[in-house]
Image 1 (cartoon, rainbow, N blue to C red):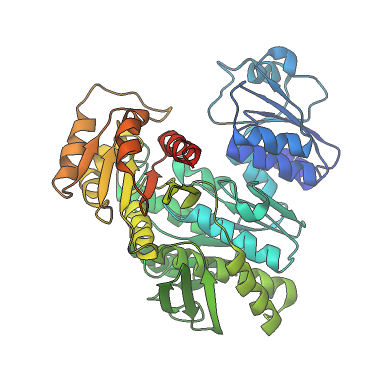
Image 2 (cartoon, rainbow, N blue to C red):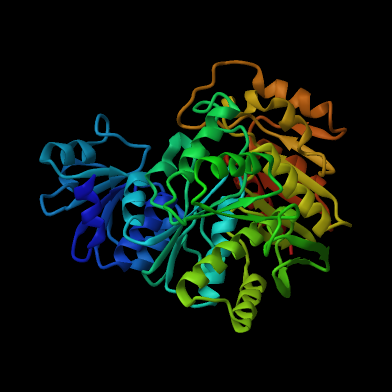
Length: 482
């Protein structure tokens, strides 16, 4: 690994080949490598994604189709998506045969981070939005920082990456399979710790221990920014306080003490406003949800830490620029994303797939649009998560006026065992909600919704599956009726 880290310390002129380059993470990483002066190319399937346009705009060449012929001896390093492996992928098998160094994406991201003053943003939910807001604030300040988020961000020009200098690096870091343990953080945000990824973390203690180990990566004087409103984060604080008294603990939230204590949070006229104890300024967002104010407070804390490292202090002018950054923030792809409005119906799409995130997001949308009927199409993601958190899923959709359920969307790492879990989820939701419909596949509900939706409604597709296609088709249908 030492040789690999050296490679990332000086990558100008080096050649990287990315297998699975159209993936959100790898396409974003490709942009980071390119901006640092590396040569970048790659391969992927012929299927089209929004990242095709991103890669084309950057002038990054890629081959559609996998073949041993894609790999040449002048490649310095092959980076690959976890969806592929050398046993079944011919590009990786050939790279291995030639002895070319190979790294899985998360390991490569970690090696890259070691060359920077890096900040990692983690948590069971909220990390993408927190990363996107942090990047937007750093952009407003013109800070010498690059940022990598887990989704396309409007304020990053529709890319997942913001490139604005090489002194600081902030990235969304993932807890699944302890992927974040490859990262080299100088500061960390932890937004939430709850049971999740039950196929890898069977118990809460398992996932909690992973976050403890991640926080332990911080160097002496490193900063742990944690949500004081989250029970798991407070438990993490207590453990780290004893194990690592050399780490600086920075709480945020309504229950926090210090500069980032949220002292007010109000929603009115499409404005999500909040104040914190340390700064005499009302910050305004145009994204719904009290959880968004929490994410914003975390992003503010990270930004202030970087500002103090960069400039030594935070000026009144910096706070004005930060406030402008909050006002300018327009969200990220599939995070309370507004698809469009047609015939008076507002169409939204959200990636929420954990019960807590679902509940908070829907409550936020309900508060933002109090006089509109809220209809939600929800597709649960993974059988293990659905089974392990069935009771929580049953009760998290209460803010909706009507719920539509689809079959569970399996991940690539699991198979449908043939159980009746889809129907059990439906029955469980029915015990908590009086108006629930069930359509096996998302588009099976198109005819019903095309006749059922009316002006004033908010229709939300929610989940990590492919039910977003339903919202897109309905929006296009009503848009054509103008």
